Length: 184
Image (cartoon, rainbow, N blue to C red; front, side, top):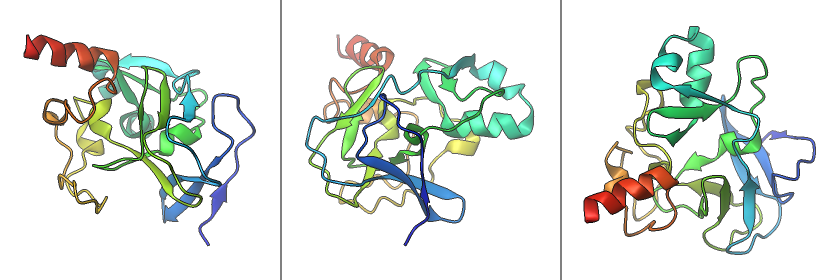
């Protein structure tokens, strides 16, 4: 059985999920019971985090820079929301892994919901293309392991454009605007 990482109850996090170790130094989030399509998984998932520019992140001490590069969301273009250096507590939402055919997606800039029904024990995943355009070198996915029929093999900086029909209405707001501007 995979090691489970308990977190104190938090009203921002669906009580039906938990963090589990998938392999050494690699975690994911899993359903502890069935979750219905549309059910909220995280609300205000970046609350308590800090906003830093790409340039600011590149000047951080190496260990903290890696945490920011790995666990941040590109909330605005080249502005990343991630754990603070003073309180780098990683919340369950930080451990949501990528899939090219995920079972969760954004429903607003602050909320993630189930895209499909999720079964007990199933890993909860999201497509990183819906909230990151400018990847850091350390957080690039050059060998996707999702194994789905829709696997793109790697996650690229232009995937948001490529995936615009599949995820219409489920990107961060600034990415949605970028898509609308290209389609005018």
